Image 1: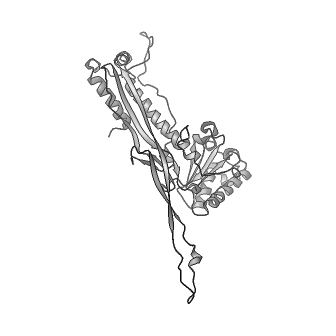
Image 2: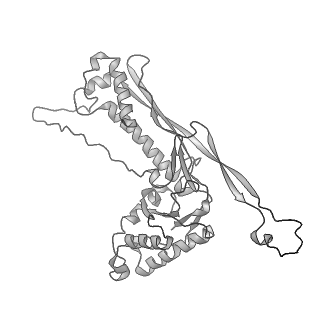
Image 3: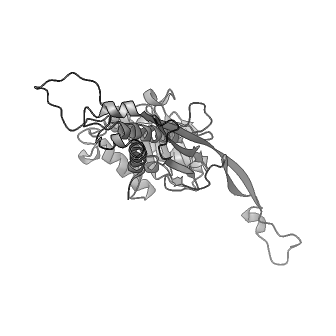
Length: 336
């Protein structure tokens, strides 16, 4: 089965070549204009730009393909508001005129969505000139650039939301508290005493926040800090284990969850986030009733077409939502 990118490239190439027979023999498209001679070798393999790949689905529940093109999504939250347990205690023979009642209430939460589109435009001149190099496909490169724009945009939106603040991401949820007393410096630069204090403070702070109703399953930290966790706290601390191993071990031991993960995220670094703080996040990642990111319309491309026989255009489109923390008490930021 072809990927979305492969199908987009095929759609563009087929349409362009089918309407211009003389171009049908071109195996590769546009290349840069260069001066070469008989002593110049051209390497067949093209070096492509590398881009960060931090998939939202590795950090939160992602629902794809539900409710396409609606402007928002309504999610119901249910609460218990009835009488408490002790109101129901009675003694035999006492007045039982009115029994306590169980009641519930619902709250409607609207999650905003945004559409996206971007065009790829080529023309006969570009394709004709591209035939000179034979090792770089203009159409493929443009389609790949557009697909990367979508992936990087969705990636950033899922963690930081949109710049107009209409949509929120994992790292800037409203209603999520920020603790500034437990983590006061990078874990990779902490002394043994500081490291032990941070380990001993995070889960109690989280449990207090949730009123002991939930345990986290994920700890996200700035990538610059994570990358330094291969060192020991000191030679005698933690039986010679690295900081990362000790961090994971502590979370797994206290939560009782062997699948607990400690994950790096460049967007959590203040240099990349615009948050003015390095942000650490302790939360429940594997529960879509607590945290959710929706992509109602995944990246989709139309077939390249022309209105004048010279310019060819295809439009790709998609739709995505704000990340919503449905139980904000089950997420806690640690900032410094």
